[in-house]
Structure formats: C-alpha cells, structure tokens
Length: 219
Image 1 (cartoon, rainbow, N blue to C red):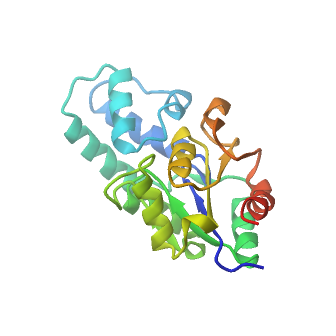
Image 2: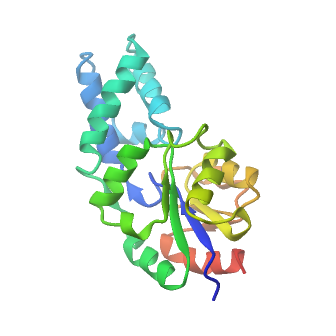
C-alpha cells in the first residue's frame, strides 16, 4: 500500500454543506440595505468562485448599489464569525476520511473560501486534524481555477501532483485539476450541476465511492 498518495478535497458542496450559513450571512448583508432575503436555492447557484464573487452576485441579484469592498469586508467578517453555525458534514464524510487515512492516503483541502473561515469551519466540525494542509482562496497568489492554488496546496501537504487527485463539485475543481495534470473526481452530491463534471476523470454519487475511485486513479 502506497503511503505518498494525496487526495485534495474542495470544501463547500464537497465535504461540508455550508449553504445555510452562506445564505444567512448574505441575508444579514442584504438586511443592512433594506432588501428582502435571498433564497438558499439562489445562493447555491452563486457558490464556488470565492467570497468576493458571491458578494458581487448577491448584490447584483438584489440590485444593491453600494461600495463592493465594504460589502465584501462586512460579509467576510460576518461569515467568519458564523461559519459553523448551521453547516454540517455531508453524510459519510467523517467515516470516509478516517478510512482514507487508514488506507495510507494524505488528505488536504483546497477551497476558494478565505483560509481563516475554512480553518474555523473544519476545526468546528472536528476534521481539521485529519488534514495535512488547508489551502484557502487567500493562501496563495491565485485561487481556483488558477493552478497555483492547487499546486501550492499539494506542496504544503507534502505531496506531488503525480500522486494526487482532486475531488470537487464545481467546474473550477475540474479545470484546476486538468491544469495541474491531476485526475479529478466530480462530486455529484454537491452544489454544481452535472454538466460541470465535463472533463473529470470520474464521477461519484456519494463520498463513500471516493476511496475505490482514488485507488483506481492512483494505481
């Protein structure tokens, strides 16, 4: 059994269902501008490109004309303080991560979420100790789909792209994996629509399928 294999996971929509907390922070922001709440289903379509993109999309949807930098700062502070209020691991995540560690895989997270919020969330959900590295959207010079983000996370985890795979639910995860010549498993249980899986090496209905796919892709 190899000991140098690495699986890099996306966070939102892949390991953790963060939609309720993202929606709550978005609605607290909108409330300061006297706007009606936005539905979680709408926010789901806006997730995946980082906090800045999410805030811009929320403001545009609600037709709020304001200073974007101030809005992003307000959202970021609110979300970091409440990142683990309602967020939950997807079914099977904790057991699967433990199984992968026992099988000799190293694990990491590569997310466009700011690293402080990611660390807070992963610690609260008690899976941070299983991870060799957490690469946030502000950890490196670029963020997904910029290959610098994934390559930096792999390096921080002590891995090598030739012995690693990416697991995520967004087109950015597929694109960054391809840019780094790494296999990608698309998480069909996440937020991204199925057409975002185009270009992935495999698709999984649940995270429980990931260990067998990783064994095959890294054999």
